[in-house]
Image (cartoon, rainbow, N blue to C red):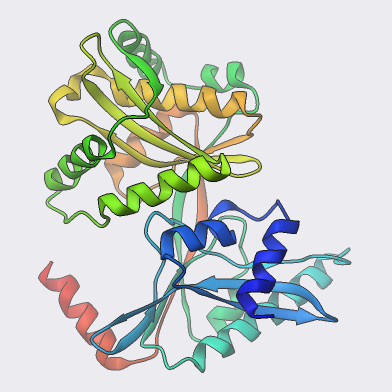
Length: 319
């Protein structure tokens, strides 16, 4: 049985694995072009590290797939009844994976861990840069309490938008959504990092496994003011895609659609709402109005080839 087949079986058995690490999601966003490192002990998978190899100009790198804000490492903590046992296991798993990566003839590895994967010390000791980034997470287990923590300004925006807009599940053309998303990137003078085919793939995933929905904010004339793609796993909802139609930027649709997505996630018995945060100040300023907590996660980077590092540094300076 191949590593991927073993991992598929593990994902079918352990429903606590976050959606971005599941076999089905990885197959969806990578079109099957991915693999997984396994750490096995006594015939049991104790650790797993899924990854995608990106090849360009003859250079191999590991990068996160499209629409996948976190990669991450699965650890089976069976029999880890003390911190010592837990940390020893984490170090063993991470050391093994770091050594495996070193043997793959890579130019670089860019790997964001899940927020719950706060165990990068062994990777750091093996030459990885372990940078802290932030997402923003709101507790939605009690929506009344959650809404009570919104800022007064956000509550005002939501109430104003409710007078002229309604949020509904969207089942129309993805081309219309794609055009709205393109506006967002155009305004930021950044190339769109995904295709309409990528949107079709994650929409198919959502329908097949009942783990996602498109929402749109409409006015009385059926104009779309904002769109949001909500993805979820066993306890967390993720605001994976969120964009406002700049033709209606003043309608406060962005505030309303997030609130309605939170309410929907709460109705599905989910406990947390992850904004898939950003280090951009303007984006952070929007998220923190929703009673969200700044939540750290680790972004690991290692360059194995000097040429690739120089080329990437040069490209970033030009941009």
